[in-house]
Image (tube, rainbow over all chains, first blue to last red; front, side):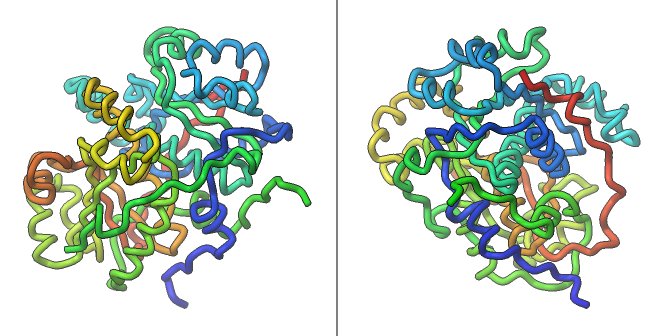
Length: 201
Length: 201
């Protein structure tokens, strides 16, 4: 038996990457709490540096929650975000290293000390790894049949104050989640060719 | 016909997320240049903010290239990286906004001006979006039947000097790619439960 895995089928490659699109409008189909939990339980398995898992998320579904979001959105993002079944406010815990006893028990003490001694290293690790987890969420959502509309046009101070009080967790970006309205997709924008941005040596 | 998409099948969910693992040792099976190109052509479709696509990659396959990598690795990452069929040195273009005429022609001038006026915004956009693209590469590699071993234990100055001369592109993290040796996988580490890090409001 070969230990080499095969590619997933064409339908899965399309759904995850090739025909998947960012949506700017949403069908009224709701997203259940059970599916949101399945989304997290899927993405949480993907790798972070030293298993540090710094991402923290508030999934906003209710009209009251949406009202709190509004002042933190740039105008171009307001209408579609109010309409989306779910908006995930993606943040990261700047003191993620306080949880390493659970996540990486064998090295927790040394790593915590390293991060505390070098706040710039800790900040970059939190931002980098929470962002990896944000991308895993996009991919997991698509894998589960959901559509996404990620956005970085937000007022961080406003969202931090509203959704992550206390100052330890800070916002990264936000993401609408639901079943996208096909009419809301923009024409596909250009990508770089391989040789524009990659080399093989 | 429902416009709601179904989840990909269980085999694909396993391959991408649920049973996928980080590998620390590699089978001798090579990875073709054609497959590396397919990897980029798959991941490049996934979204970045304003389609900014700041990721730049050097795929290191040759013994000469591997020799250049070695001084930029922390000792714990050296042996497995020398052994891997491919090591991707993931970087980002700090002047990514100079390419918006291709990537986002309708808004290129305004966005370029915004980023130039706010270097902190530009730096965060470059780092965030190249990191999203790094996660897309992990997911695309798994989708294509490849295994990954991403690492942030690198000496950035050494790798920048060697792989991204000129100073415009800087290193983010590195990733071994190939067909993983099942014996090199560590026991699965714990993850947070949903309610530890997520809320629904």
